[in-house]
Image (tube, rainbow over all chains, first blue to last red; front, side):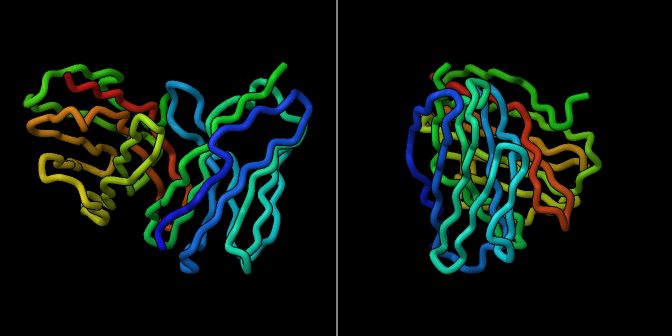
Length: 111
Length: 112
């Protein structure tokens, strides 16, 4: 019940394309769903986050879509750029601040 | 200006040794964490401290002992290092009441 399942494991997208990463969870007590971006040799950095009372959140080229009934959420990167090439992690947490991370998606955007 | 800093960045040591990793944050946060990222990049929480008090302690061997001398520091001491301890260890911090966690640059530990 504490798992967050993330797919795909890796993704290759052409420059200008849309990158889509999906996550699914089981624990309905989760109330915060962040996405983190990690470049090689660096720590994860918060990209965008959503709470379950909202179905979509957009920040620049990054959008989270949230489906509470299906217990799924996804990250969409519009107009993907080579600089977006990184590993992306979804996560879920409750008020205890304990993040449960997905397994990560390695994104490569081809120039 | 680094918000969450860790030392050392790299640590190579022999099996059976004892080592420590230090973490400091200058964000004024009151909650700090240790995460372990394994070779498959899976991130898992190990410990969390709030105002120097342990609030999360996952199923981690007793060989790992965190210490928080004050709100801005959280150190991780590891006794009798084993090959399986090889990983990247990340420190993170947050403010109680706010969900966002800020991560440090990581410490890559290699046990030979």
